[in-house]
Amino acid sequence: MKTIIILQARMGSHRLPGKSLMPVWKDMSLLELVLARITRARLPDRVVLATTRESRDDPLVGIAEKYGVAVVRGSEDDVLGRFVQALDAYPADAVVRACADNPLLDPVMIDNLVTFFRDVQPCDYAMNLGPMTGFPDGVGVEMVSAAALRRVDRETRDPSHREHVLTYIHDNPSFVSKWLYADDAHARPGYRLDIDFPEDMHFVRELVRLLPEASAPHWSTEEIIRTVDEHTDLLKLRKVRT
Image (tube, rainbow, N blue to C red; front, side, top):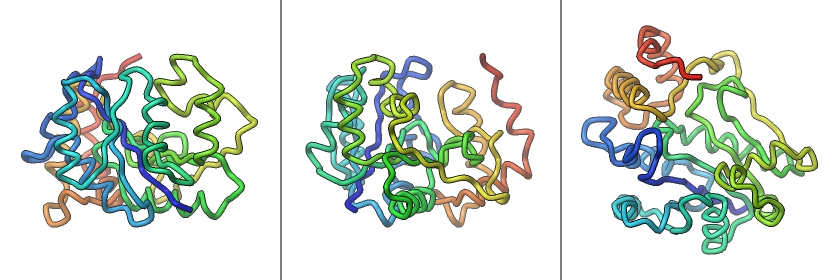
């Protein structure tokens, strides 16, 4: 089963503009950290960056090229359309959806989901996203068959579904969806490791400063969990937003 990772990224975030180029670990930007980590996944055949045609996203293209990652550019608002463009340009049987606001995406988690998806066929959609599956929020991904992705593209013009790519599947039980749940060692649904707001960036910068230098920047989910377990005061750096 040929599989590609499609990574969505842009500079025009409403909540934290320009975050893709902000330094997270030493001088490594958010996008660089994500690419350095996900390109180590063994089972996907290719990584594709899906960004926008806006000129402010030009620097993201250069970073992708540095990591040997292909690029497609499309509409800023129609993220689903960008995914279909990427699939058209780089045909595959299945797609892993990754988001560039998750600096601690784990290539092992990606490989585990790809294996799970292949083993539980027939299946349209699978995920190990936290907190729903018990994992920390920000280390897991989603996976969808190419046929299901194209079906979503055909069936919905709803702006929200096209922005969030795969929520149409969540709302339609006719798709076969399966979840890969965390075991007890990885069950930390209260740990949120993604970056949406300025305080999230501060939290992640403080967290990675405490992670083992010897394995940087390829820290395992186990190392991340252990570090947060030992420094739960870090969680207070985040605001509670409703």
